[in-house]
Length: 171
Image (cartoon, rainbow, N blue to C red):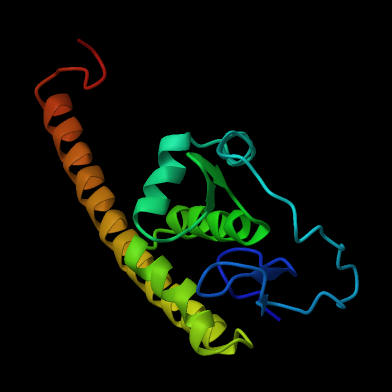
């Protein structure tokens, strides 16, 4: 049903709430969905584990924490990342790859606080994805126009050089 999106949605549940604890967020399907894999909701990740898994630096993770996008628990100076933090980090990174700003990502993630069904979040993701697609298509059209203009210049200059008896490809 999400074939028109510029990426593949996977059937997952995201665990977040105001304190980013373990409250179900049904983004695409409930955990009872066909093929759902049971998970250990009590699993804790270190910053090193998440860094390796997502191929990012610990500094990047701390940056997203400073921006308020993830909120790990603390045990002394050690950060303890929950399953929800891990899932949010995955959504943050996907959002960045797709060209969403951190503000847009925050708004999309925070929409779950308003509507625990995830419907508002999905609708907003669809709306914003459509806006990004339209913007990229405009940019592609502009690039195509520039390329065509340069090809015209290239053709005219090559013709002029040939008329002067100069090989356009030579030195």
